[in-house]
Image (cartoon, rainbow, N blue to C red; front, side, top):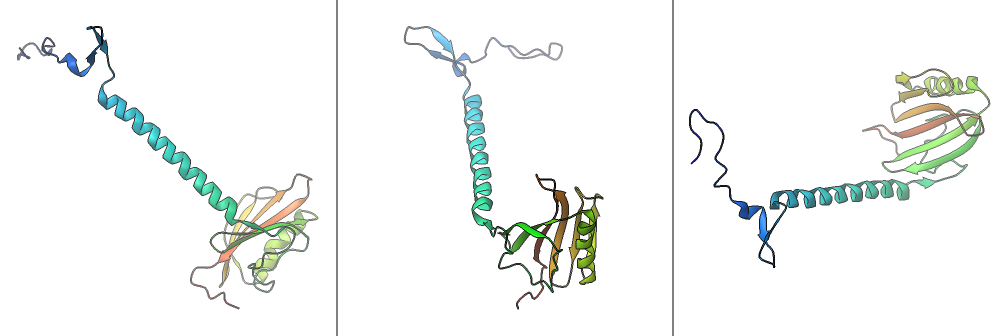
Length: 177
C-alpha cells in the first residue's frame, strides 16, 4: 500500500522479514542480527585492536630508544660552554630520540634552581616562555643560537630539589664541533 498524503505512517505489511530471520533446522524461524550491525561490531573490534597495537608500538619505541647514562652526562649533551649546568649531583640522564638529551641535577635549595636559569641567560639563552613559579612545577623554555632547552624544577622522592634539562639542537643550527 504505502503512505498517503493524509496518513504518513508507512505500511509495514510488506516488510521483508527474510533479512532479520533465518530458517531453523526445525522449520521455525529465529531472529538474526542484521548484517550491518554484525559488520560494525567486527569493525569496532578491529579498530580497537589496531589502536592498542599502535599505542604499544609507540611506548615500546620510546622505551627502547632512550639510553640511560645514569649519573654521567650523555655523550651527545652539549659542552658546558654551550649549555652550562647548575652545580650539583647528576641524578640521572638519558639520550632520547630526535637528538634530545635529558639531565636531572640534584641541588641544595630553590636558590640553586634559580641559579640554573641565571647561568643559561648569562650564556646567551633567551627565555621563550615560563609556567609556574617556585621550587616545584616551574617549567621554562629557553633558546640560543644552537640549542633549545626546557628547564623544570621539582623535588625527588627523597625531598631533594632538582633541575631537569631537556635539550635539543635548534632547527637549522650548526652544532658540529
